[in-house]
Length: 372
Image (cartoon, rainbow, N blue to C red; front, side):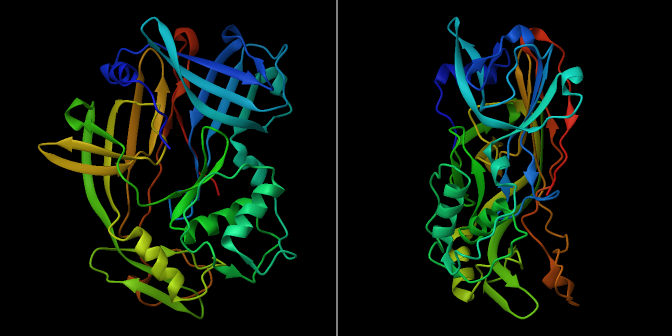
């Protein structure tokens, strides 16, 4: 999902002396930079305070204007960030957004909050007339219903059929279920399309950890077992040699052991290091891309769970903490054996969201709250 940029772009980013700017349009209208006070960009995770298989990642913008005169409040919001290369800006698309929160006093505060096109799928949806339906066909149907363009997705378990539905579930909930059985998570790309991204992927960037302002590695997480358990059934595959990945017990598409085996085959031996680092950010990389940090001739692969601060240079903080000791959350069963309650693949999100401050304005740091 990373965006292709020139080598000079990357060299400038990692030098620590980049000159940055932003280009913002609303409903096709370019907003003058003189009327933009600040733009805070973040990647909140829609899964309480942890990242699990099936997580629906959403990008968020909080835009503060100097005044609301001639600022349209309808239509797509499109944002690009530029880095000056050879006396011209090379722009990287951040993505398409929709106004999500317009408070009554917005004209006084001059502030709007925007989410990517995931906001379209927040409403409840009734699929009772669609069942029985396969995971692939439901994914296609949901995109058509919400007027969303579907990008690529894994073919794992795409033909699994469900006869179940819950009219209180949102479109995002169903997409999360489908992403989970496909061995990945859901997100909107920079092009505005919906993608299901496999959990197990190759690292796409290598960074010398010694160039980081700080670097602290913690524990290695490696999947060797997948387990699903509800009030009646238990399906598992693999061995508890290292870490176990637990599948949500309310997923409608878990029909038998084969579904779990297919997930197991897709994620087996996925390795993620828990680590914390701060360095110059590469905005061409996406949240949850895999990055390899090298130090002392050793490699440490982790998820790009980062936050950006845009100013004269771009600093990034990556904080990945996979808790291999926390208990699994289950709402419909009681288990006396604590070992069966372990939830692995949990990433604590303690993100400091940067403020895109145009024309050398003050940078503020805020804490991202993770919501369901």
